[in-house]
Image (cartoon, rainbow, N blue to C red):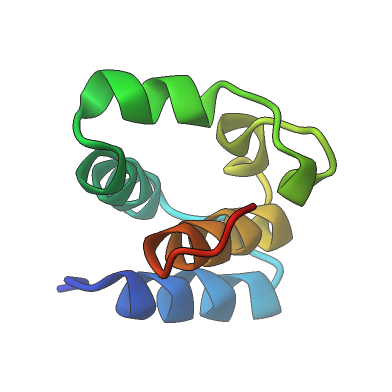
Length: 86
């Protein structure tokens, strides 16, 4: 079972190396980690639906549909959690 953001990042990156998008469970876990980071489902949804410079002005939600971009979303969550201003 994936418990930490680091484990999730590794799992998503592993699928990306094989050209596979994240699983539905991985997407749900990404959303869960976003909710924990941003203080609830509503703020997390707002973040997921807002274009961000760190993702070339695409929304994190849109990026979850491709293998490489999903890994970037997880990395971005990790950076935000560590206090990086993105």
